[in-house]
Image (cartoon, rainbow over all chains, first blue to last red; front, side):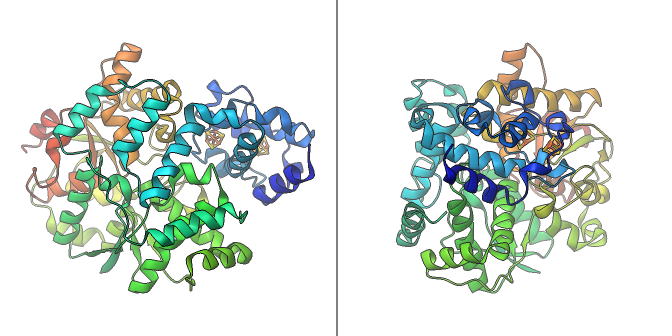
Length: 177
Length: 286
Ligand code: SF4
Ligand code: SF4
């Protein structure tokens, strides 16, 4: 695995991966462990063993709900939720195809909306995501309900200072992470 | 008290009633809210799952705008609240990142703005101030206070105890509503997963509804637009998916408080629930 990966994972964690003593408390409290291929404590173990690349293709990274329970409870103060964020970044780099569906696709469509309008345009976001997932009719009954209660805005309501928002996104591209 | 109000994207759309009821209740409690001019999205889970820079820089702009106003922030959305607080802590902790963010925004941070969740803002007013406004006590209604994740976790940004939060119960005490002791109050509802990993999210929602049903809650109370969407809007889908028949209305904390304060139900946005709240309301004569 390349240098950059390890230094970045360590930096992101901001603490010592070696401190994990595999108590399993993170996994015990994780609400989505049932749906993970690698459980939270196993993520830590694989990193300790230098087998990080196995994690980059793992489903666990994208079913983690970022609920922060593991981070809150770890007796060794390891910020596992933050670590998973970093692994997600490398996962997208190693396997760009992961962004074609599910969570990574949703994140991408969401951020595109923020980049464009400065705010999330919920209707546009939902339609675009459903279209890309080829599930155009998903949540149709909900959409109808929300329209009737004015819970959906038909048009985006962009920020005025779009230049400033654009600056944030271009600074990000220039590698400032 | 005067606060810079950051509604965030949800309160302008799917959680309109949270916005309406928060503003209304605040006004009646003498809490002046000034919407932050030209605020932007905090980036939510999408940003922090994608780039640490975006996750800090997007909320940083909001913090800077409030700094210009010279006011502390009220962020009713739990997810926005956590992102603003997290960005604040990162700017403090990482001077290099702070420099980059300042460069990108062309703004500097003094870092003196405080960010409050709705729970903190209401609790600060004190029990007496709240009690003075209660004209229609909610005696007889049993509710399960639901905090979810981001109000109370991680500890660095938490507004209450991460394992046994009590602020909501405290705020509701003057309304005489019966707040239940239950096991689901800070379980995750899977808000970030509802689009990208639907079945996983439905499982989490079911578990929370089940825990609330077990203690015979007449309603759930929340202070998060994403929790509300998952628990209320998705309840029917959970029933379809698991063959259950939950029918537990989900109130925003601001709505329940507003009802006890005798405010107009329509003005509190009580007409836009997916799970019909009328039975619960009739129990307390509203
Ligand atoms: S809770 Fe912390 S120490 Fe225990 S297994 Fe998980 S990461 Fe390791
Ligand atoms: S943040 Fe992710 S890994 Fe940690 S407990 Fe929550 S869902 Fe599990």
